[in-house]
Image (cartoon, rainbow, N blue to C red; front, side):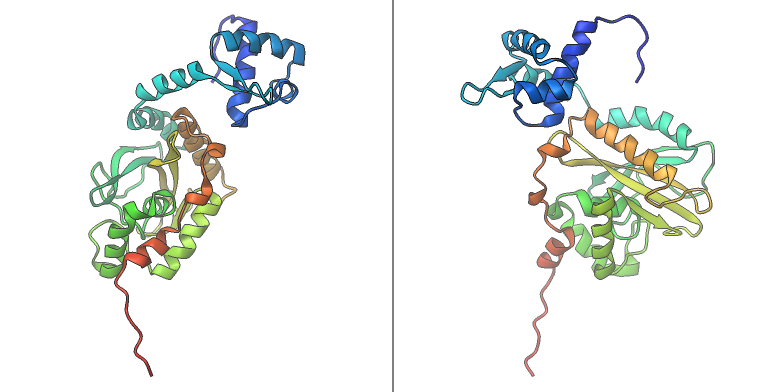
Length: 286
């Protein structure tokens, strides 16, 4: 974001030093911190002395490394308390829909699964039956597959097993897929950071959906672009996909999400958990 007007250069330099500590996600020695902030070590040290007095930064006595201090934590908490993910996303998708020229939706995890809470039309009108309150299937829509890939498995396991059991008789928008197919789609979504659908659940309509995370690494909502098959390219190199990922990454960052701070080893396979909770059929002995 470009901000007009004359600022205070020393404050901006100090901001680069603090930003380097945020991006690093770990304590840094003076020289590596100065390199990341693009300042001389002596200049960085002077700023760090002031930051330590304000408790924005603290220094480990044993290693000499610098890290963010208690006041930085208080600032972060104050920011998070005043920020509502839905309000943030709701304002942001107005301009985003205009930018991409297509329908953009916000979905959250509701009682019955992925639920649309806001629909923003683009300049290119899409004739699909999507409105606030619409429930999407987990397995048959791009939005649902994002929740399957990035929500805690235990949260969605019950609803997922119900969809797979009912098959074509599910109530949400989208035709249920098989467990094997879902496993592959979930793995792909996790690899690329988004989930696509082509010509499903509505013939001639494509969609791409991506997650928005909060400071704890938990998925809060999904942003989905919906458009005609000949207009919306769902490939990873398409301009629409790149725009969506840039948009969701920005929203996540504004909610305090830092990828390096999350422990990816704690993420379990959604479908495996669903399988574990599903009824087990014992094989008959020959």
